[in-house]
Length: 257
Length: 257
Image (cartoon, rainbow over all chains, first blue to last red; front, side, top):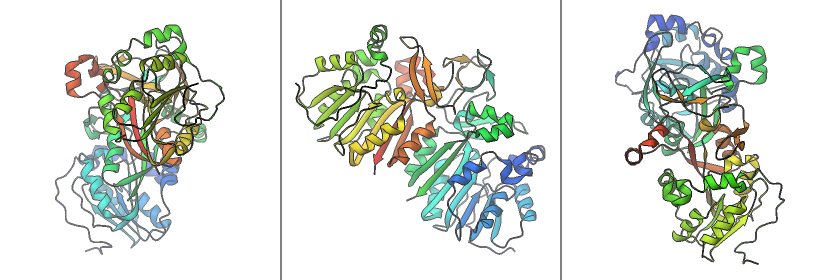
């Protein structure tokens, strides 16, 4: 029985789609630069760092912690404790193998039903996970309650421009320019795409819904970023230039009132 | 010499493009339902109303007031005074003709250079005008100073999804579905389109820039809406259904700290 840094409430296992434990998906996903190289393999990481507060002596929850790269980074930055949660047994097993730090705990958890203890965290962080969650309002209400007053929520999601269309793939406009299709933007709900596996299930929400849910649940919006690569990043990796055409990710920081 | 409700500072006439005084443009524009029928001719008007504070006994500035429909409406709602500003001599002339109210004043003004008196307004309102303004940071700083503490800014703009592309016109996807093109989203600046006249000049900004500018200048974001028609509106006017595919307008309300 592992030690518990903070009691975590029991939760139903009314599981969301767990594509990360599909062997075919996991094999492909594990080869992404961000999984092999860690945080520096993600081009948006410098933009995320700019949104993160000082975590020295702070209690962090990492929702969708994957292999634990960010959990370990928070501890290197001086965090008092990090609790990482992920739906994937594969992910959590690998995170535990790769981590040797009594200040980090990993738990298998479904964000549709997870209940964290009240006012127990100073930062809730989540990277590219919330677009898998159906009930965003419940999740944000729970996070608000789990944060101590003055705490921060920093998260990244796939951008709704990227997610909206029925066929989200590049087109070419009349000048031969890469062009991204948008349709069904205002029609929220399920989107199914093929990404390392067939029918990966995500939930499209408008940008307005994301922002207004945060405000309605008691957060003050601090900053939105629609990730675009810097000229230096494009010089190093020319393939990133297409990210200027449409944002693939949205980064959000919000303050718990 | 007309009476002045509030002193308005002199301003340079370093004019922005004044397409509204182009006779061809003005003739076409004047026939839009929202110009002929007034506020109820704009499908987004109910969504705007939901964002507006109670204006009883409040001082209102209306930036891009056009024919004065909203200025007169604010007075009907009990506003103490309304100052309307527009770059277009045609618009201001028509607004003056159509208005018989000592509580409303209209002025020709360029939002690139307009300076309003400090802490003189309780609400600054603007409909579909700010996307013509090059220097959004200057404008928002000026509006923040012109609002009394606790005042509100409510505005609508063309949505950046609508504005970004080099050729902003409907495409059809592989299923025959109306699809909107997005490219150059992260490349801010001039966009030229043909709309009642050739080369109408607008300024594209990302949604993040719009939101972050407000926050940086001292506003708290209250709400964003990406206008989509209601089922009732689509039943009454089936052509509106395409507005579900991509947002044409963004509505913003923000609180002056």
